[in-house]
Image 1 (cartoon, rainbow, N blue to C red):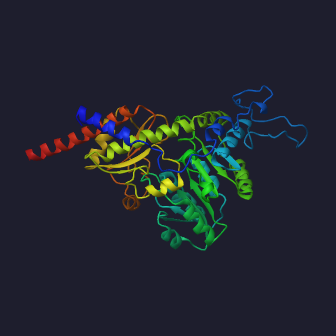
Image 2: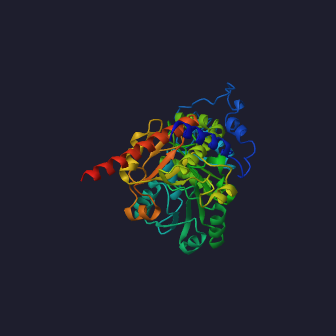
Image 3: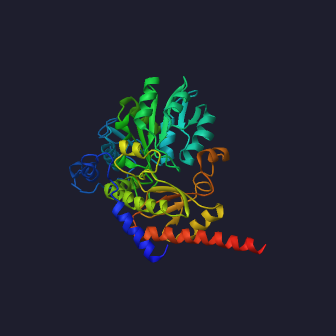
Length: 424
């Protein structure tokens, strides 16, 4: 774009970017709960406003078998407890468990099942989830199947007599399909009330989506992403309301040993206190970037649930209060154009993961989803030209300027190729 065209695009985007219009109302007292729940000074003799980091691995007991709430740090830790209470409040849940990673959360939840039980999973999910279900859970005797859960009729057809768990990821990673959580939960609970509905809420965070209120039994996160929000903690979270499932998961958390460190719990709890501020800005910046990309002739297609062009845009507005900073798009051209775009970015960092304050870009086919079989990648649309962005909190004009210059670099490759062909 020329300088004047670029300025005009920014002005147009600014007018369009009332990003919260038409969505569900924000959850009551979210910011207040994020800041105060789990941080009550009265719980400490010192009346500390910020919960201290409890590094002790063991705790003095009043008598044999008579502890004062904590006995051994793997079984429970004061710093972890503060975080878990805060997350439960934000999810509208009775319980929360913190684990050592998002994958550890997946592993722990899956251990609710026994050999021969069936898991029905959304076919478009994080590559690590796909890999765990396909290459590990299946080897341990679980009957794993995948289906496009955006189509409720396909969900009904995919249910089996042995189906014990439904695994939903919405929006999906990386093609950002949106799944009707309530619709899915109603169908499977009518089929069998004992089926456990799990929603991976990593992309949305509780600020934009509360799966438990929509009928899910378990809400889980890779807290490494938006929940912590600063790319410096590895953690998973599980929220739920059912007493029976909580007691089993609490046992598994300790028995398997999938617990996070007190320091990581402190860091994630601190991150939660700005979650509402960060998610608002992620949404605003991502909307601006998505509108810029959708209007750009160098881009084939943009996938962002906040755009009216998204197939499930209306569903998104019905079940969410907004959208996170995740955008996927297909660049025009071939693999070399995507590679040139990614290597030409200056503000965006080419890296795995998402949800931090900094903008990241990645190439799903060769990075996050490299382990997904080729035929499945083709079916899901994970092609050489698909690029996934995690739009950060930098200034909007800087984000768009970086995308613009990287697209220009990719186009220059096309011109170079055409020139070379003209010489042959």
